[in-house]
Image 1: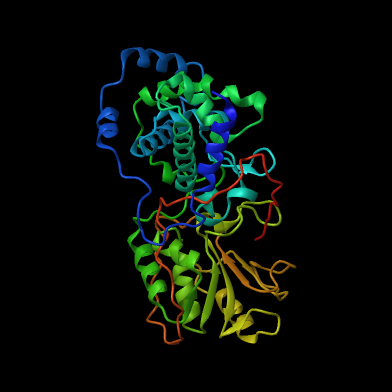
Image 2: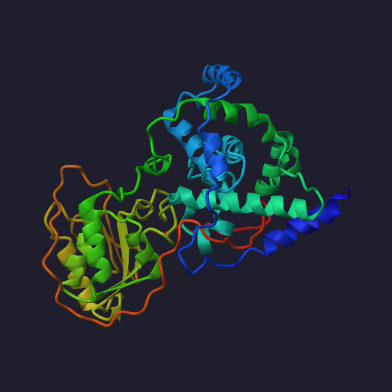
Length: 405
């Protein structure tokens, strides 16, 4: 069969993917019990022998964190009705099963997705959210398989010998590198035959830096709920989603409540929607839910002439040590510890913490805030898995790599 009809069908399937995430909280796929049952079966003895050989020949098998990532990727793929090895093979080639904040051009993450192409829509903020990366891979794997089968290859994807080409159609590398994925099938199977360590991939964070605040922190949950209900805090839809998902440091939530007790504020960015790097090339605290950008104070945009915003910044710099930010970016040159100003902070207050909250740190919730303002309506929270947006392959665009603090 000619490749042209197949490629046309593939492009049509990718173009047909919806442009935005679904409004309702609905998963992309329903787990298939047959795959769950297969996952629970005892591993093949031959695979265990391969696993032993792999463990002695590669650092991946000796790294519990990366073995955990392999199992997590495989479980998500199987739930979607895909071979569990598929994303593991891809991530072995692209990142060595690491959530890398660097790569060729602006390629980052487990699958080296390009920031200029994919850091928007339903995948926005994917570098700090591995589940969005898995969603991207699964959605495109399903689209590729659907296109191939629609073009006449009814058994496409059934035989492991074709999985390398399948991944290549998802990742779309240069032609000379398309064969790399098939070579990692045995290694992927070996990793999945190893015992899964008791490490949750979502707690691993990025390869550099730490993980976001765990959702299980009861104080963080209480503080986030207070922020979400506070009428003096206007939240960007993505910031609201970060709070609802438990991705925000408890200190930051309490700080927002303290700020709102003094003046109405508008939050423009917490984690999702901010670049991974700062303008100085360092990792942004936004990536770990430890920073906020405030775009308006007292009902007026933050500018050098907003006296209420300047007063609020000074107050935040004088909070109790357990709550005091380590960085406060403003439009003004303020000679106090933690304060800074530059051309990128003329229109907002940036407030953040350089280190994760200490386990023993007690953060007390403030009294109920007292400044009522009208809140704008918000959309439902973004689901973890939703329909994808169309886009070019990794090498088809000349993206801009935006960095800011």
